[in-house]
Length: 61
Image 1 (cartoon, helix red, strand yellow):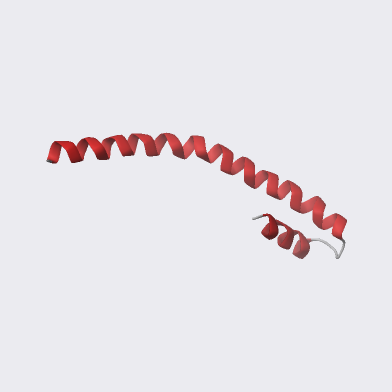
Image 2: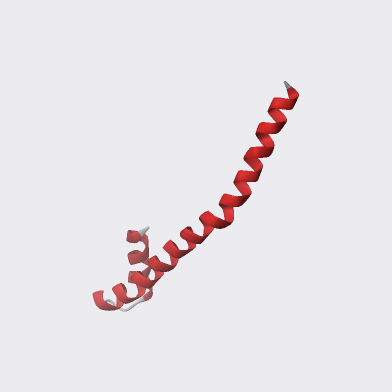
C-alpha cells in the first residue's frame, strides 16, 4: 500500500521527489485512518452475525 501511494504520488505530481512525498504521506495516513475506523464499524456487524450463525447451527442439530 505504501508503494502504491508513492506510485500515485509519482503520477500526479511533477518529477520531484519532495512533491511526491508530500502527496504520498497524507494519502497513506488517510488509508490507515480508514482501516482503523473500519475495524470498529465492520467488527460490530460481524460479531452479531457470528452469534446468529452459531445459534442457528445448534438449534438445527
